[in-house]
Image (cartoon, rainbow, N blue to C red; front, side):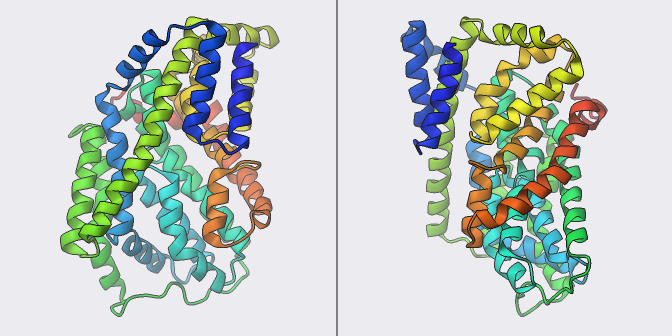
Length: 428
């Protein structure tokens, strides 16, 4: 009963608009009081949990995303992708999906993709006949591809909390991420199959394909350097994050020359604020997790579900549904670091590989984060798109039901979709 009250308090705090980190702090205080936990021991354990080299990847990937925005990399990547898709039915919508995918392969965050891609593409989409509600819904869901396409902040946190290989998790969600991107492109093409295409994005004075490709080349090299280095075993995810920051800085300062010292400072401050929030959430969630583990809550949850059913298919469906429902009212970080680990013993009992479970969690988080009533990514996309969220709910639900849910079900019930690449690369 106490854990349920704790989850209820967390939901209540978030509904009331309390910042996520302090919502966790409130739940932690309640659990410390309810279980009479030793705060000195908890603080020590929480600090030791944060003493991880892999966590250095967090601020570095976040900083890389901000540097891409301020250094001109994002704009040139989007212009190049739009030119490649020009003349095709639904080409500009497909360009937005592909831009979010490429951006996710560098920054690992959905919010950075929304801000970078949305501010550039929403207005041209509206000029070409895309309703702003539809464009915002497409932006909200496509930005979440960054949760699946490595490097993913969500997967880094899941790996740290559950002590799984980050590299294996990165490989496990690459195929599902590409499936989601392809599904959204096909969905957009079907919706706009009978509508004429317009002129596209406003381009620079040298708007030839060769010119756009040449200018985008440094930015296009970043995903290949990051992913190729990680999967090739040349460097760890943390080292990849550092390399991404160095390359983004050099490209912004010396190649594109859009990055100034003021913009660089602003990027450092913004990345520091974002990272500070994440680390606070992580600290409180570690301490909450220690209390729940000490009190045997995951084992109690496993027994409770086993009393309902022992069928593996039904258990997986129940876990998926619960993660999606919780994700509808909580942010992705909360679901990943607090809720998802509670089901680990249950998944192991039913023979679900932890890396496979990580892919299931990521797919469920993608659906939940773009589903009302909270839908943080959808709301942010609507703010960028200058449209009421009510105009985006219907297209968002259609995309979720026809694209995101089928991908999640395939990943859940066909483990090969998430496990064959990690095994092929020798990470498992």
